Length: 371
Image (cartoon, rainbow, N blue to C red; front, side, top):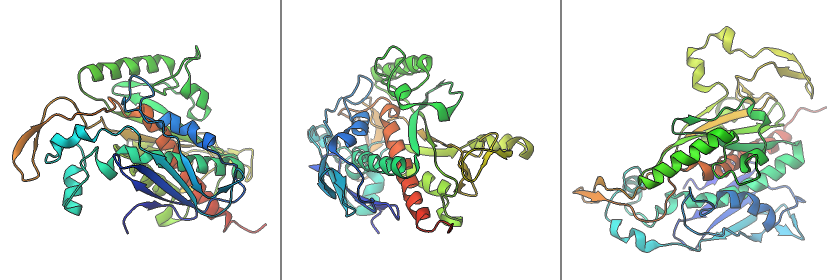
């Protein structure tokens, strides 16, 4: 297995490189009759694309997708859905000087160790450029969730460096709050806390001027997910969500609910007490430290996940490294890179969470209890 496919009932297969002609995704399992257009796909692709503000990479890509198959008269047919996104603004010459060098923090060495060769132009298959088609697939998954069970997925930037937002109720955050500031201007850092957002932008600008980068945390919340999604033991919902987020470049940690805070909690403090609630079954919990999943199965409460994203590894400042032959050298990475990955990471995280939830919804639908 080459590791380019993900999911079961809803399955995606991707191909493409950072500096190749295009990236492509084939999506199997999409129900027929789902409304889908290029304009639908562009909503999240525009949130992911480079060049959208001064605090992200200035590579200019329109990321306008092509629907190659699986849609007729504006609706999905139920057959394989194929989407292609061309690359338009590659500068492969920026990487010519480092083709024999290993960039610190990158997959150059490990790709060489695995394949005996690598695409040094922007990292090839390991580049975050390949996530554009995942975001497009995530739009389809979001549509399935909205149409089938009324669930939605919203992500945002929770922390950049030491600047952390105050989010009283993650489940109440709206897409509008993530994308716009109270004055109506664009929220370029995608943090729903305006004061923290301003401090994050200032910090990212400082990193860019210092030819450095900074990491942070994105929080992704799914509301309206019914109780009962997930499989016992190996295909737990939390396990699949964790894997989904870890497949994204630069993710080095994932937690849900109270996360690592449970290490210092007592059981009496950590347990969420059950109480009568709306819905079917008519049960909810008073608090949500379990992050919407118990035993790896959704509880009907909001699913709350956090992904820690490392600082961008590509730096214009000089760093020590070695050549492919193991000789000492120094490297200065040219090209156009994000001083912070978090603003563009948000739609990527949403997409992977939506793909898992839509997959598990379709799996549950095929085996749900008889009335």
